[in-house]
Length: 503
Image (cartoon, rainbow, N blue to C red):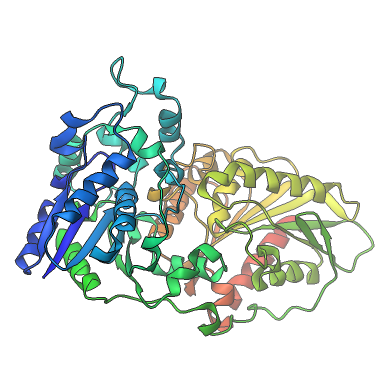
């Protein structure tokens, strides 16, 4: 018999698994829905000393009392921290670890590291800013009904489920989120399954692309003992789709699921969709310039890559085939093509990346070969939020903003990332600044929703947005889709951008 140990995330308790546990038990499995100290109906046991170690011990004690030979342990969100801590101390008892819409914390990582919402981070780091009563600064107040989206997507929750989530929530002991996770390494060899919630911005395709970047921390994901599933759900699938989640957990316990392929086993990347000649390239710090054949200053297009891209990845984005292609393409048509390596390594790095982009623009505009009064900015993928600064207050020299398969509003799992990086809001003050948006037909649903939010906002304020549709294209199409599916869209977008620069 398989025993499932279900560990929930912040503010919740064992009650959150009620429907999932019933489905698993109907299949003949043994189920233990853990309520950690201070949570759920054990909230009265919380105290200033309740920390991550307390919750690790809760899970260890439960494992020690499970008689079933196979223990599948499931961690949702924050719950993966006590799950990993306990599995690291009892690896011989664990047959599989399931990461349910959870990060991949390493030794020394506190749960705070994965919190991207700045308001929540401020509450954790400055407890006096909380809503709690005097003397309970060691508690993080549970969210109000309209605050749950800071922790993840809630669009798929019914009104009753959201009310239940709010009414049964318990304040989270602050030290559970700030105390570092300690791992000996014993957990590293255990089979794992990731359950990704697509409405929360995660997908197998996204994980595959991150692995493809070469980040050494993610190379373990190509191990054949690692499997993946997707659920069309937000952050709380145990409330929104318990039947589907229970079915996935049973399949995970059986070792089923999608397996990733190693980088060397993948088909080679497609060539850039447009045949472009080699062009001279100059490298200045983080910036590369592709120069056209011209005697007078020429307009420039600054291409801003997406992310987050893990630090240390080689080659860096400006040496990826797509950006080599875009830089050469712009130069072949008489503009200076500019690529920049910015430091968007983590969701918390948008301010740093914005500084890098601003510095690159300043460098380019100061170059005597560039007409500093005719600049276009072109954003890709997760670089989309960096467009908000320029849309909110367009400078006179900015002649066009372009975006290709962009993220144009923070995804649910990101928290709010900060009010600054919200293009769907900033577009309302863009005036008549030309905006060229390339929209892909095979986009991930969560990313497509941000584009539609942006388009709706642009229509309301009558912004000058040109939408170019690529119906057969995927996110990151330049190196994965057949050129004939995307060539027209790339050429159309480039013609439009250069037209605005020359106009």
